Image (cartoon, rainbow, N blue to C red):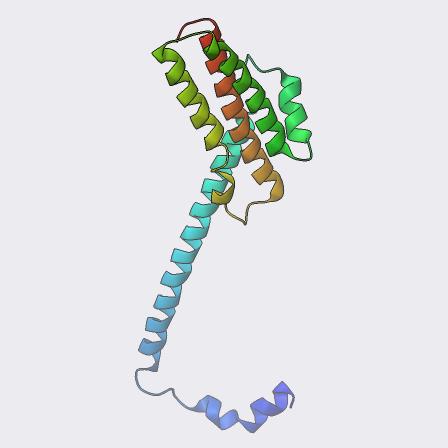
Length: 166
């Protein structure tokens, strides 16, 4: 049935006044829908702001640390398995720390070894926490920054331990 035929056929129904209280019920229903829409919109904006903040912080903290050659950071971030690349680098630094610790017999060595183990173990806890909705590139940037930070921390720990400032 075409719209014009429907209107002609039901024209008397359009002339009738709505039932008493119809306008008030309609306004109340409309108000509830607006509140739901506002809450939904605010929650979406908040989520987008959080994701944008994380991505921005990651992008602006991209520069490698002074002790880490830029080629290493770029190599790992372009590697097919970025996580394992960083973990290989971290394990190499950990091996250096272990060699230094073998030559020393002190409580400081034990503290350094505990800190080193904590940094190595902490590398696995971020990936499951990231939202699945994040684009792949943003996820990669966040993880790269996270792994790079752990590698830089290990390198700093090794350098301080080597120079006996710990």
